[in-house]
Length: 134
Picture 1 (cartoon, rainbow, N blue to C red):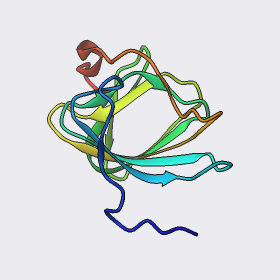
Picture 2 (picture 1 turned 45 degrees about the vertical axis):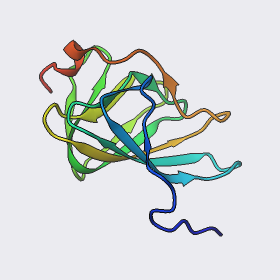
Picture 3 (picture 1 turned 135 degrees about the horizontal axis):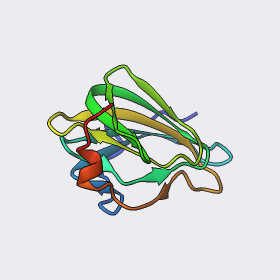
């Protein structure tokens, strides 16, 4: 058993290749193999978002605070709020982040397949991000 004291693992800024805007990540679960589950607390400043991406085994998002958006290909983004949980199936191209004028924090939970948790694609265009939510 291992206990990670609050504040013992540093917050890191998300990789700018895969995110637009300022995004902060705090590790929650980074269990060694054979475990596959990974979880991050991700804080998006207003307007910040991921690039398009997929997950080999799917992803669950649980919104902890704020208001955000989640989008899939060829569809208007959808609003997500504190308390909402989103399931994204394996292989579905999607993005998620804060609303334009409101920050958002979510817990992102996914499993690794052959050490990989995500397949990163191109950044989300402003036109796609700013489409009126469904």
